[in-house]
Length: 147
Image 1 (tube, rainbow, N blue to C red):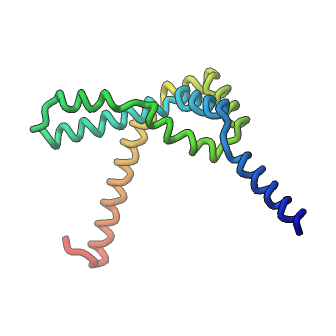
Image 2 (image 1 turned 180 degrees about the vertical axis):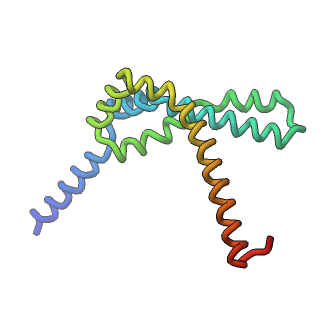
């Protein structure tokens, strides 16, 4: 019985140790996030969001937004994303991502992804608008809603 308990304790401890990230893996995840442009994209999203705030709150001085944006850094976002990558990727996976993002096609992906994302969002809006139009027409034809 004592051996069984020790075995369970050992396996549990070993599993917990395996689940913990190493400083080396954390550094490599941080590198992947920098190389892939995810950190930069996060800050860009925040800047866009603050732009919307500025439009909806015109009474707030420009200086307020500039001061607040000084507090927004990619590092805060990276610190939140690292455990997610740690959970889903092995250290070897992360190393392979570094090789990929350092390759010509990885660099091209990083450089073009913001444009692709923007164009995809425009395409998605068009698609969604067309579907909404079809739904409304069909609902009207079926008599579920009035024109």
